[in-house]
Length: 419
Length: 122
Ligand SMILES: Cc1cc2nc3c(=O)[nH]c(=O)nc-3n(C[C@H](O)[C@H](O)[C@H](O)COP(=O)(O)OP(=O)(O)OC[C@H]3O[C@@H](n4cnc5c(N)ncnc54)[C@H](O)[C@@H]3O)c2cc1C
Ligand code: SF4
Image: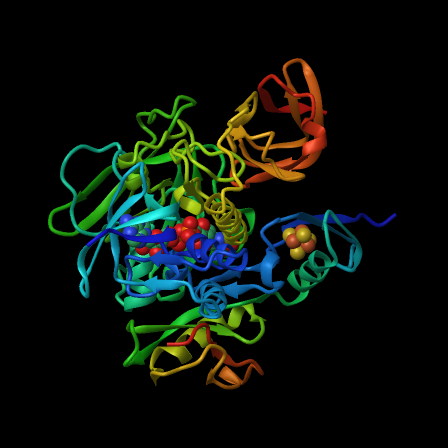
């Protein structure tokens, strides 16, 4: 028996994968399979019970599960084939996909195009500068969130949080509302990586102190965590002796960053971006391997789900074009991050196949006010946009048109400049 | 001349998080509000100065669902100081599957004039 084929196979059924499926379907591709490892679609949103999702898309502030459900309803209106409780274990550069599930066992299929929408993992190792032993009570913030919000298991009573990313901030409020005492949040950087609104409504509202330029330097406890020590850090982020403060806690949550899950991308030989740790893509979200696309947190970590859905749609549209033979793979212009920019996506623009308008997505390296974001081609400045405020915690979008790029033959650089 | 004071707030209404500054006269009356990108920021700061309001999300127990907890949200914001009361009211609630998104789980919770709604179907 020959290998089963599908026009498009989407790996991961979170916001990115669902949007990719809906959009590819609505653009004329009907032979689509969506594979999701969990028992239902929705991804990380299912545990994000707080509101704040979908302001751009639905013009209302939905809870995460509600945003997911709205998208699943759109997907249900299509004939996209969905397999849940199905984990993809292999992906090759010629688009052979192997998955396992309890109904079919071990299956290999061939796809005309593949969309990677595998989401991200939480960083944990190396986050605490203490060697060796880990008592119980040390969790990543996202794991704790899942236990509390989906399974109703309260992970602790006296809590400290390391890292001021949004998940950590949201968990500080959540655990306080559930009756725990959150003693503080330590952030190694001199600024928070979380959104200002989350500092306000998750910490300030509950008088939870934020220790900037601090990190956890010791943890104590045998079976269960009993106390932690935090220390101030110098400008090189090294702990300063004599600045230690102890806290008696039974729980330490770590919210020290997210990293795209690229296990399958790596297996397929896809080139990764040194900064985002996700795939290198062109403006069609196509990776270095023709016919394999990437989007969502599996490509680069997003702060807004609306942008994840948009990116999923771009990948879905591109994959639909690819299977119809309408996309080339000509990575003609390269875009690099200049001064003040920590990364920019896409890495390549295919000037022949590009749409009339596209968008660069970038993250800046520092907090600043009244700056310009400038795109140049060699020495020639092509376009600039004024910004009242920039922050590493917020992804910036930089629209660019085909006309603006006409005549560009050299590589492009995007940078932050003073006004 | 009377001395004005200013207070700066981070607007929490949307992810943009504007820094909104309220200028107040001696008696606490609002002279001006600036820095908000949209009108919702002004409403937010007026509320913060008089009676801060917050949305609240949490979970309740569910029997027969895919998970043990059903996420819930309020139909409208409530006074900030009432959040603990509502959390207490949710403690002993248990519902049976199936539930639809938007179903009323508790109506007029704590006599606040808002309902607790299911955030999703389960
Ligand atoms: C804790 C947290 C709080 C957030 N808060 C907000 C907020 O307030 N407002 C906002 O707008 N945004 C918020 N975001 C951002 C936004 O919600 C997420 O970025 C977005 O939902 C990610 O979608 P995704 O599809 O890329 O990834 P995910 O939702 O993680 O989906 C990836 C899916 O792929 C599946 N998968 C992975 N590998 C495989 C495999 N090998 N085989 C099969 N399936 C696989 C996973 O099971 C998962 O379901 C938050 C994010 C987090 C993590
Ligand atoms: S003022 Fe308007 S734009 Fe600014 S944070 Fe508030 S709601 Fe958002």
